[in-house]
Image (cartoon, rainbow, N blue to C red; front, side, top):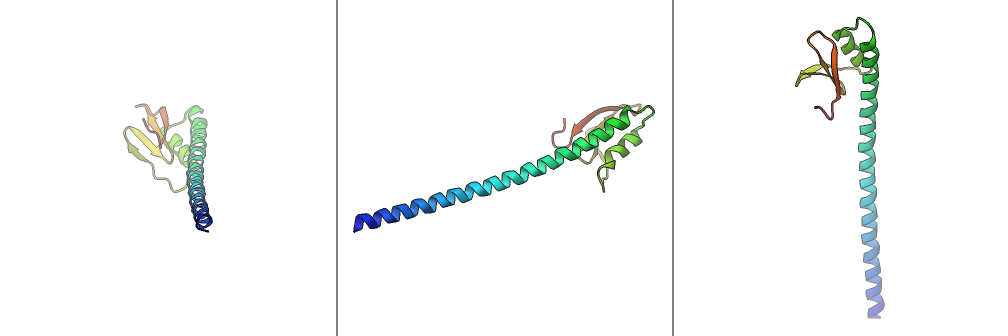
Length: 112
């Protein structure tokens, strides 16, 4: 009788620990999925901004102001700010030469 009771207790504990392990795995997968979704949104936003900037920068006679406006076009409520030589607009940083031509574009989450 003692052997079977001990066996049932061990099996119950194994079941409990395996359920805890599976619950942790599901929680971890959910958190990973959430971060992956946020990263995908950031990349999509940055890509949209870069495409708008590339279209505007390739036009003859484009100015710094028109390029910044193109970068802010896909974003609402964006207040550009300057830091480390870049003008940060949404998810991208724009670096301009002295004459106002676009020199470099970087992502906000991995700046130079």
